[in-house]
Length: 232
Image 1 (cartoon, helix red, strand yellow):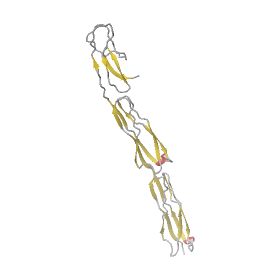
Image 2 (cartoon, helix red, strand yellow):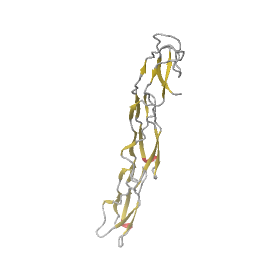
Image 3 (cartoon, one colour):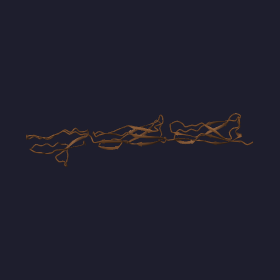
Image 4 (tube, one colour):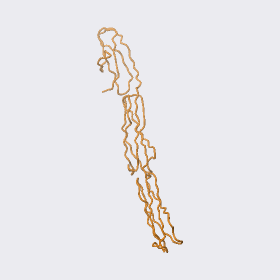
């Protein structure tokens, strides 16, 4: 009498990381199978939580009345595999007309597979745009609540901050005066965004200063140029 040949095979399983152990306690019996009335018991110990792969280990023992020596046993351990979660972090886009104050937008959205239950991240958004133009809405992240970088494939997408030209209203009045020995000037009252100041010059291509030119002696058709510049 020769032993019966049997194969004990534990199951394979896979999933994306979710913070919970991956287990599969199924063991199948192949080959010639058990003789009538014989039985083996199995204790499956294979488990994996973080991203990676491992054998689905198990042990076996003959039930009462079954003799192990009557069997030629082959062990085939399955594979348990946990793959990374795909997460995309995106800082928001924002735009406004120039008003002299920084444009900021602190929102970061999470898409893809998202975080595993109970895990999260905090965000530090540093993007800012004050002058006319655009720039990336830069940010960094820090995993929290036990989240591990190796369990995620994280993609960062930085939004864009855009500042367009603002609306500026100028009010100016001509200077019409009779000589009285006193200084006279045009009246300029630009409604300007915060952070800008008017500067003046007697020449379009000349040097502009904060001082509004005044005139004491008789003069005709003198043009005063003014511009808005950042307040230094």
